[in-house]
Image (tube, rainbow over all chains, first blue to last red; front, side, top):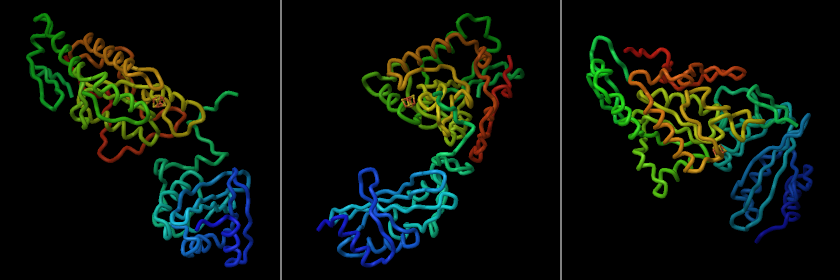
Length: 156
Length: 217
Ligand code: SF4
């Protein structure tokens, strides 16, 4: 049975005493989760029978200079049909997270892409290399303050 | 690689498919009228192009090769290996990561070889000229381009027109001097000013600079 966002949030709050809040993320409600319990929360979301989030849809980041890098991932339960967004606010200067590759196989390339373009370090990732840019590239192009000699600024 | 050696009185030229065409051209050239034109005509009417595409323009290239527009009637057949091709149609956005690979493919093609740059992306970056960190702003920065076909993407008719223009260009060539046409074959540097060096050429990628190829006669 598909659960509502509030029910998912309450189940999580019952299990994790930490601060979990609901935030509006571009018209989709997201649970904002402390960085420390991120991996445990996803593990719980996946293994709990009623929640059963068995599919990792997507992982991405949003850059908010100067301090904030927001990591977002979308999970879906194919059996129950419910869906959830998790948001983790990272320190932009040293962003790091535990990898989800041990729970979802497709997290592997998703996280390599985020590492490549945003510079988030994923601990316990099996193979954290650049995915898109050349191997010897420096910098992370989707950071908003990224500069490259190849870039010709669009005239205003 | 076409080469004319002073010691052998023949002209050797790699033909598409890997054979070698030998004619006693060094002695015939200039004496028998029509040899030049005949060889050029043969070259122009069997331009085998390399089967590769980089982005959306490749779809249009495929459409041109398919039955409605039918490249085959120009004698143009795709080959899936650079060793058997005369023509490289760079169809699509060339990124900095892909650039050394394309350069390698170009270097693997036998002489005489030609390049058609298809679409705005290949000419100067096209829609990615501004604000792009990853797109090479013009393939003529790494390989010499004979024909530019503008458009985003160019229609198959435009590409056909480009191929006909290339055939006309080939018909004006003088044997053994096909690298001497002014304005062509001058790109030798892999380092583009203001850009990081393109230096991740895969192992085995020999770089032959056009002006180092011995052309005699
Ligand atoms: S020129 Fe236009 S159609 Fe062609 S590859 Fe570039 S963006 Fe795509």
